[in-house]
Image (cartoon, rainbow, N blue to C red; front, side, top):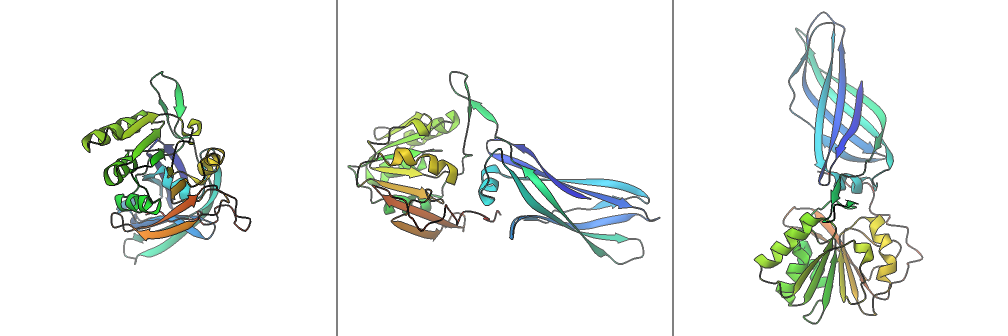
Length: 306
């Protein structure tokens, strides 16, 4: 038998638990020398692994092999275009190499359809001890991608840049250091707020950088000349009413994901020298208008996870 469950989902990581049940009815011990497992959604394989195993199943016995696979929770969600609380149908496949005494090794393939439930990530608490849910697990943007985002936004020292979900503050710090502009970072997670403030102090840009612990969907974006985001497609869509209030000529730059059906003015794909992966950057100039020919973020599903 074969199965997979999402065992836990924390702010930064989740654990997928693969269970393979091996029933050995023979009079000889069976050894499992190799096992490859994978998960698919539709035509796309989004996870594949070949763990090191050396497992023996005694004669006329049954054994369950549990293999935990730890990964970044947000990447799993993005690969499946899923959100916390959703249930997604997935295909589970395992290829086992087994051998018995005096016989050559042989491969056994197990396949099964599963429904994977995506729980809400763990809660954090703000300074008033009021529970808040973090909508996006922090995944830092590579520094060379940050540099390209700022270049595309054509920032100058007269601009005010707002980073929604600022993480460790690398975008606001880079904007202040390289362009001398004012920059404000917003994040709901107090750990990220502290990291961002420390980053600004370390690079001596506290006079230009402000970090606020605030829900990004309550921020008044009208003073901003540039808005930077690295969120999920769902959260990008939630920002649309705020983005529509930006003054004409403001710029919006997004890492990885478009904003609903709003047509971008520029789209650049680059390979980062930090992670050797392709990254897509979108740029809009306000006022923003829907693209009548666009399907909603059709390019974000089925992304591979390493």
